[in-house]
Length: 276
Length: 288
Image: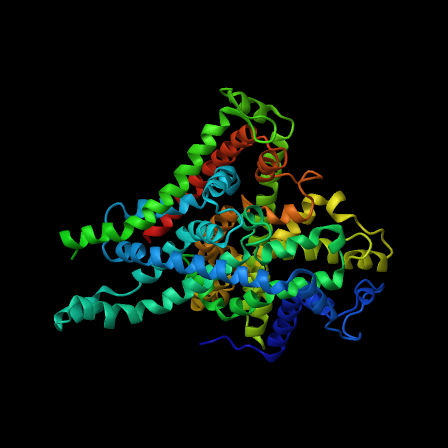
C-alpha cells in the first residue's frame, strides 16, 4: 500500500517545492510588479517589492507610444492564421499516416521533423528575396505562411500521435454495425480526434506567438507582432524599467494564460506521445 | 485493412504537406547553395560573378568561425546539462506529496510561455544590469562588487537566460515520466534496504532515459538556432556569437550574401550532423 507519508514530510516537500517554484517564477512576478511602479520606484535602491504606490501610468504610456493594439492584432492574426492553415494541411496528412500506414510512413515522419533542423539563418536571405519579389515582405500573409511552414512538422507529428491512439477496433465495430464511411468519420472518428486537434491548435498558437527569428527579420512597421514590438525596447531610449515591464507584461499575458490552460496537453503534444 | 483505394486516397491527403515541406526545404536551400558560390554584395555592386569555393574558404578560415562553432556548442551543451540535471531534481521534488501541487506546477512551467525577446530583455535589464539590476543589489548587499554580467560573464549569462526558458519544458516532461514509474518497485527496493541513491541510479534514472532522450532532441532542435536572446542582449559581442548569429551578421549586417550563404551551408551541415545522431535514437524509440 501507499507509503505512510507523515505530515511533517509533506510540509517539508511543500516548503521546498514552493520555494523553488517561486524562484523560477520570480522574473515574471518581478516584471509584473515593476510594471505598476513609477520609474523612480522601479530602480530604487534597495529594491521595493510590494509596498509602493501602484500606478497604471506605464500601460497608458506604452499604448500611446507604440500602439500596442496593432502589434497585438498582428500577433493574433499571424499566430491564428498560421495555426489554421497548418491544421488544414496537417490533419489529412497525419490522418492518412495514422490510419493507412505504409512502410515509408516512419521515414516520411522523420524527414518532416528533419526540416525543422534546417537552420533558419541558412535560408533567411532566399526567403527575403522571394518575399521582396512577391511583395510579401512586412506583410501578415507572408509571415503567416512562414510560421505555418516552420511549425508544420511539429503539428503533423502531434496529430499523428493523437490519431494513432484512436483504437482500430472501434472502427471495425462501427463497420460491423453497418456504418457508412460518412457516418464512420462523422460520428466515430471526429469526436475522438477533436481533443487531439484542440491541443495541437493551442500549442501551435503558443509556438507561433513566441517565434522571434522570422518575425524580427521579415517585418518592419506594418506586420510586426509582439515579439518585434518588445524588441524595440532594447534600444537605449526604451530603457525605462517600468515601461519595459508594462510592455513585457502586455506581450506575454495572453499567451501565459493560454499556456496555463493547455499545460496538460503540453507534455503529450510536445513529446509526440513518446513519454507517458 | 488498407485497400488500394484507401492507399491512393492517403497519398492524396499527404500530398499538400509533403509538397509544401519539400518546397520549403529545397527552394531556399538551393538558392543559398547558389549564392554561396557567388560574390554577391547587394549594396556594393550586387552580383559580381562566380567565385567557386572562395566564400567557403574565407568563411572557414576567418577568425570568427571556430569561436562561433564553439559558442554554439557551449550554449547548447550548457543549457542541456542544466535543464536535464535540474529538470530531474525538480521533477522528483514535484512528484512528492505536497499542498498546492497544481499551483507550484503552474509557477514552474510559466517561463516556457514567455517569448524569448521578453525574457532576454527582462533578464538583461532588470536582473543583470550592473547598476540597477537585482543581482547588482544582491551583490552589494553582501558587500561584493556587482558583476557586469553580459560583458564579463556573457556566456554564463546567456546560458542562464536560455536555461530558465527551457527548464520548465524539461521538468514537465521528466515529471510525466516519473509519474508513470511503478511505485511498488521503488517500495520493494526500499523495503530491501536499497539506499536512496541506488534506488535513483538503478530504477528511476533508467526509467527516465527515454524522456531524457526526448528532452535532449527537442531542445537541441530549438537551441541550435537561438537568435532572439543574443539579438536583444549582446548582439553577438563578448564571445557570444554563435554560428547562427555569425551567419546573420554576414548576410544582413554586412550584406555579404555570398559569404553568409557559405556560412549558412556550414550551419546546415552542423545541424545535420547533430540531427542524424539524434534521429537514430528517436527512430529507435518510435517503434516501442
